[in-house]
Amino acid sequence: MLVTSEHDIASQTIRDVLIEEHGFRQTGQTFENHPVMGLDSSTLLVTSNRDLIMCDHLEEHFRPEVFIFCSRHRAQSGRPALLVHSTGNFGDESLFGGLPRQLSVSNASLASAALKRLQREQEERGLTDFDVTMEVTHHGPTSMMTPLLFIELGSDEAYWRNKEGARAVAAAALECTKAPIAGDAAIGFGGTHYARKFTGLVLDGSHRIGHIAPKYALDGITADVVHQMVERAQERVTTALIDWKGTSAEQRAKLLPMIEIFGLEIIRARGA
Image (cartoon, rainbow, N blue to C red; front, side, top):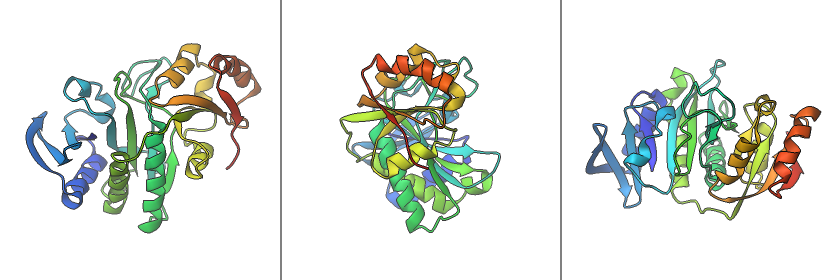
């Protein structure tokens, strides 16, 4: 199921592309006074009255295999970007939806498929000024049992209305409706919010990565949250990738015993 919001300019630009260019049609149903659109018997497009980061209520109304959120991305730089990430809060704050120290159910296969499709769309559409990257796990929703993924168009109002960028996100969202679910996945630790090292590992096919905990979250990370990174994943997590340069020795000393409990293969992430 694809999810958009009436409060999100980028989301509505993407929704328009999905309806006008991909054949979504009204199903006769409504959700929060918006028509539920369908592409086929298995793919629905819904619009919420809530901001997407506050949509923990969707399971009260729908039971899809996965929720794909088509969202804006806001950055102070305003730099154009196409982004993918899982959701959750590593710390005690939940200012942007979800609950403190709670992670959503990730799907690394779909995150990988979406990121690769965004890169392809960037190249084919000549979106050379757009960054294509994974972000670390952040914001809500966090409490649903259905796997979810955010695919975002950034990073200011001018780009939220950019049709070519919206077409790239729409294509990536639709890619997720047909991508196979792999048998295993990795989780990541360290680095900055824009997880470029992990992005490279996904794009080159080395790994499929679900939750990523950045360096800024590691000082306060708990064993319970690490447990969620492993257990709140649709696939079986077998590997922990650590950005060695993107973590301190003290952080690694705290983190490694938490990871080793799960018997994961621990790999020093290399690359850009």
